[in-house]
Length: 147
Image (cartoon, rainbow, N blue to C red; front, side, top):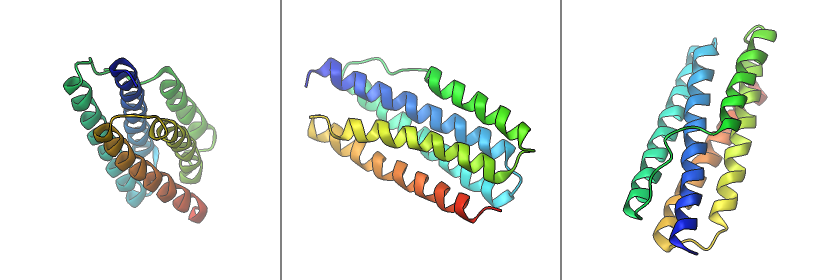
């Protein structure tokens, strides 16, 4: 795989990670349950850390890290805001939307981890993918328990 393709793959994951960070922060602002707010804030911090790690790797490869979120992520956050107002900011509705966002992240990481990337890059993506799955499963389990 060419260096340019590796950088493009990493930049896509940077955007996904920034989307996750912003989505979790939005969810934390809207959630009613204080413990849920904490879960979302912690997940946002994990996404931010992951994005910084990917950006560092992109720089080491001679690329320029993406500095924004994706358009799809911005649209998803907008929909999360709209839906939460329609459903009276129900924590369950917020969890459902966050889970949808994590489905997107999971898919993006599954695609990336299947690519023939350099071993060091693959190790980073694989480790972050496990974190994405943990976030997804945590949100799914909280949604299943929500009233």
